[in-house]
Amino acid sequence: MAYKYTLTLCCVFLILIFVSHTMAHRVSVYAIKKGNVIEGEGSFGKGRPCKDCDIVVLDSNGQELNRAKTDDMGLFKVTLSPEKAKFATKVIMDGGPGHRAEWVLEGADEVYLHAKDEGSTKADSYQKQQVGVGIEDIEILRTIIREEVQRAIEPIRRELLHYKSEGPGFKEIFGGIGYIVGIAGLWLYFRACKRRD
Amino acid sequence: MHISEGILSGPVLAGGWAIALAGVGVGVRRLKDSEVPKAAVISAAFFVASLIHLPIGPSSTHMLLIGLNGLLLGWVCFPVMFVALLLQAILFQFGGIVVLGVNTIIMALPAVIVYLLFARAISQCGKKLAKVLSFLSGVTGVFLSAILCSLALLFTEKNFLKTAQLIVVAHIPVMILEGILTVFVISFLTKVKPDFLNGGGA
Image 1: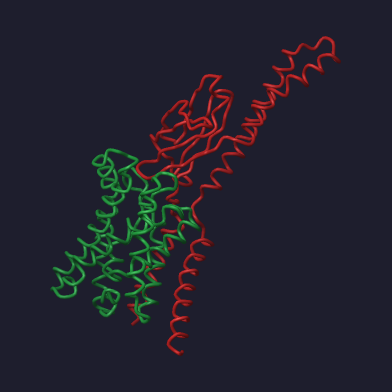
Image 2: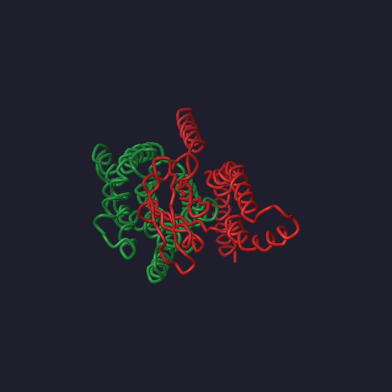
């Protein structure tokens, strides 16, 4: 009897060791638009990059704009012509047969594009008030600020991605087992009720 | 072996759901009340096994326990895997709800085939042959699952042979490990709890 318990305990312990070191079998891709270059990273969960995977950039109509492959770190860079870059809305990664992930370029990236259009009118009025400051200077300054801000928030974005792509924790694992026990319990309960009737 | 959302076409997904629900129906009919706790335990094991990731080979693979499920549960593995895959889709984002039907078939159908091929032979033959057959059950389960997965992808990946080859090669370590694990679990259960191997009332 003691042998049986020891063996069961060993199995459970082994599974727990494995589980605490697992990486999710989930594909995720992240991308950011920097001017006319789209940079990003693909992974099968934290710490396991998608190597040599196909990356396709699409516009809103689903038309392919360009494609690339991820490197050994799972990183990729897709260069588009400035005209096309405006329309890039989706990045799709093919992580091998049956595995695909998407990233929609929106939020900060889109704001960045719109800011350029709206910005020129604000800059015009500013120029009218400030004699001696050329519109080109303001544009250059704006570009520098934009680049610096993007550089500064890059680590935060990456951290968010890693947080998002982190494998399931104990909460999800034991939650799932709990659901299974619950379903079995409910099943037996209703069967027992039926039998009593 | 979980196919992600957004890959398969509508007819494949709908067909997948239809066959999977039929399989679940057959499984539920064959599920005896006394077998429910056993089915739940195996469902939980299957649910957790997908987290045991194997860092071997070119792609991302994990344990599946298909052969073992088949030998222990028979047809009942359809509802058992359906529930576990549903929870995996919701809690781990493995696969997805829309592809749940196809994913259930990919894993449960090979398990049923393993059951039909090996279960009776294992319970009747000698110890040594039972070990060999258990190993083959583990290997066959994963192999058939890889073939089914390639079939499901036939309409999107076009080149069936190449896709099948890629998936099968990526799963060779899983096949070997599942074979070994099945041998250990089956011979252990034969010793301590032989009635566990009755094929889930199927």
